[in-house]
Length: 478
Image 1: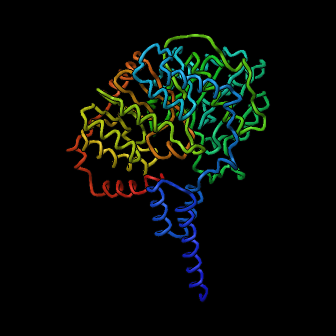
Image 2: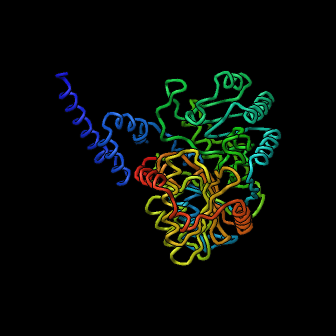
Image 3: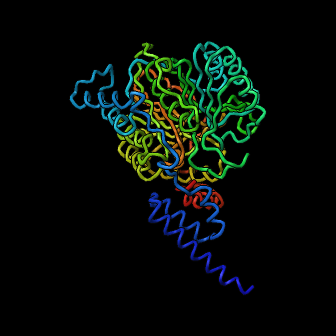
């Protein structure tokens, strides 16, 4: 046992070195830095292993080489729109008062502003996947799917059968899935799809099958593009639980969009960029991947964010939306762990007389995240916001609606993981009719919810308060 003091000394030195690396080299957010330093201080050896799995930053230069926007024509259109807005020459069909939000997304994410879209809203999995399957059956040129989770269950089989059928008919079928989210997909299932001609790629895979220590930097996006004309974006993954067949979660309340119009081009570009990062078989620009048909009048920007960028594009959009509110802000999210900037924006809105309504689920799918959510809910109640706990099933919807005019629907939760660690994509909507439909859906969900009042919140047990405090302390790294 004579070596124990030397081992202890080595661990201390190693922890100090790692701490210095986190502070001076990683350049993390201050709250996340302190959280990781506490983990290393209180659980030295285990803390280091946890950091290897959860804490490392992504190296954009070393891993990601997907800046192809210039080649795809995006940069040229963005610069043209920016100049038009700056000179007050851009023709807005409606809602010109939000031109600063359009401008933000153009500059912050190269998100082209489109005004010729027709959009359908889905709030349950059955109708969403019935529509998606029907559209895929009609595909004549290509089908592009990107999902965080794809399961080999009844719904997964239905999707796979259509994909294999279309591939055999000569339709180009590409499926991109996240290697961690879809880690339980059987090799036999994958081989069957490939044999039929379906092209599959895994995002950020591990060299060890079934074991992936790269917990962060996951592709949490959900996109489907058919023939460059129809696009799906929202919160549903592919699995039976998303159509309400899980005993644990019951009815799965989510929000998804079906888009026809130029906004599909933004979704297609996002898919191509992600596919080219993951695959050795790059997709190059071709007219057949992009449609220029006019379908409607809804304004849309497709905004993406991820750890490969220094900007938190979707979060910045949320803040800008909330700060523009005059009457109300409705928020639905399964995880409510805002950073200081977003928390302040919501609190300021509530304190200034804007009606802020927040809806969260009544059950956790990730316990620590859920307890942290309850902690932040208390802050919102103090500021005067109304908080609703959804009771019908599991609420997975990621929606913000402001003043019945603008809205956001997509994959980004209100938490650090979505804003900084995962790859996300949202549709920012500028259309009164669509916003009104999302408001109606929110009101229907209120009927299936209970309201959390300050009185009820203050009756929490000591055990729950302790869980909340610990989870909140760790929230910057959850």
